[in-house]
Amino acid sequence: MYVSPHTGASSGHTGLPPEQPGTHTRRLGMIAFVATFGGLLFGYDTGVINGAVDPMKADLGLTPITQGFVVSILIFGAAVGAAVGGKLSDRYGRRHNIRMLSVIFIVGTIGEALSPSWQILALFRFILGLAVGGASTTVPVYLAEVSPTERRGSLVTRNEIMIVSGQFAAFIINAVIINIWGDYPGIWRYMLVIAVLPAFALLIGMLRVPESPRWLSGQGRRQDALTVLKRIRSAKRAEAEMAEVDKLVEEEREARTGGWSDLAVPWVRWLVVIGAILGIFQQFTGINAIMYYGTQLLEHTGFSSDGAVIANTLNGLFSVLGITVGTLLINKIDRRTMLVGGFFLIAFFHVLVGLSAILIPDVAIKPYVVLFFVVAFVFSMQGTLGPLVWLMLSEMFPLKIRSFSMGVCVFVLWLANAGVAFGFPPVVTALGIGPTFFIFAAISVLGMVFTFTMVPETRGKSLEEFEEQIRDRFSGTAEPERKASIW
Image (tube, rainbow, N blue to C red; front, top):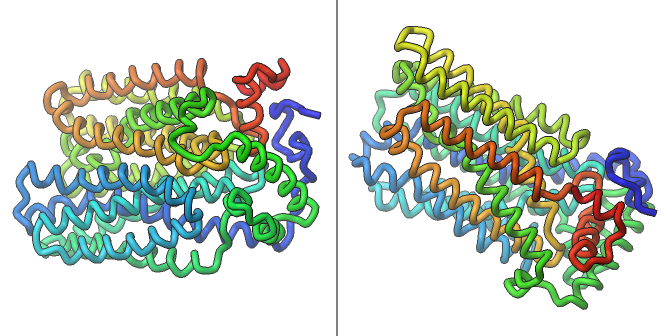
């Protein structure tokens, strides 16, 4: 019998036996830890450029145009990597894809650190972007598919924790290196090459973790899937989950799902459109304007060059603190509620940043007031939308095209990211900090309305149960209480 997920996060509402602690719990934790090194690399490689670009510019003689190209080419690579990586993950497996991505991380990192010219640097940053985009698609799906329903939120969100930890680590390392060895023109190479260490850790670790049981089942490898489930679940829970997956796989086989043709199916297309729009709203909060240009933004408000580098580490610190708080709440509060609350807080602090930039005269306290509200925005963003959008993208789509659908959405997300990366500096130059943040605030209000009216609830449901509910809603066969529970 179906019970609304609002009654709690226990597994009983899904008809599955409660998950019991044991050695399988620790094993699952270790699997999640290894896989999220992909998130750590994602964060470090996108955050390190914040401090590396100035010595890089001096060493390679970058012009404003070539500097923008070198910085942004990784984002375009990530968009391509997300789209292609999702399809490869569905075809060859989540584990296989992450192992392949770890090799690309290694090649891209070493290549960019040894680049003799900006052209070679741009080439390897594009290659590195392929790995970043592929990891942003594959790792959350892998974590969602190995996680029990009641722990899925916290386990998938570990990837976002590692992303912001990687960015924070990049900010700290940049600040230390610049303040100690800043006069050495090639110091940027050492900032970049540090990322090769977690890349090797990811490669070695993924040799020892299992494939996603849901992907194995979708490939007709039922016994292998059951074997994996018994490694990461209690025995009764593994058998019950396997029966649930079997049922869904058979339904999808009859429906012949599996690729672009599925976008002609109304409920699949509806979910992909919602996922893509969520990704756009996440990026247009302006979070990556801070991650990419935080140092320059703080200089613009009145900090000295060295002071801005040090102050920017607070953005990384409060990213980590925000995601930590979000992880503690994510299994206790409905996804939609957290999204709406997050959009509200983001809009609120954007308005305060804008008003501070416009109304406070150029006195000593001004940069610190702006920094305070920027940090508050970063904390609010990373405690809500940051992890939630990635989590919901890993939960929303049908099994057979889960990585493919997420790849489409993350491709759009990265294009929105590129739009922010390109648009933020000229918009700030043309309009100023205040009006720019007012624009971000208005977009966040639209995101709040979109979430309230369009985004379905996924908390407290197994991946298979949510898919069945959405499919029934569009076919008109859903019971009233099941239909209501989606929103």
